[in-house]
Length: 158
Image (cartoon, rainbow, N blue to C red; front, side, top):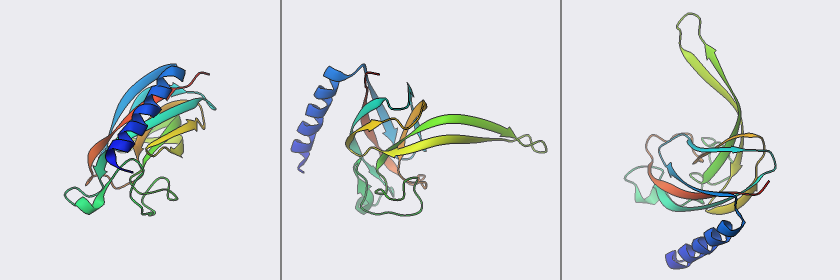
């Protein structure tokens, strides 16, 4: 799809979201950040609408590794959702966080229970659990990434 047509489609999608949403937020998701906290608490089954645009590089400086929110047509074991495109926009709902402190070293280790889901360039998703909504990139090795996605998040009526 050409850039102009895609932008028009995203604008139409966003304008449709405005009419039916309780709240609209714009969240910037850096390609080199593990997860971005949206600040949104969700409940299981709540409908959320996402519209994303932008570009990230899965390998800074390599134009062959650029992708949009739908990701790069490659699947690896180094991604939270291995059945979806590498670098795609994804989300997770964090259900619980446990902090474990090592008695000998004093270091804290954070463990979390979360439900992951695919978003891509635009989708409507029913939240898989109650908790805090985070957005991220479908890749675990993010240190060499660059760019960002801008995501419009519309919370649906409960």
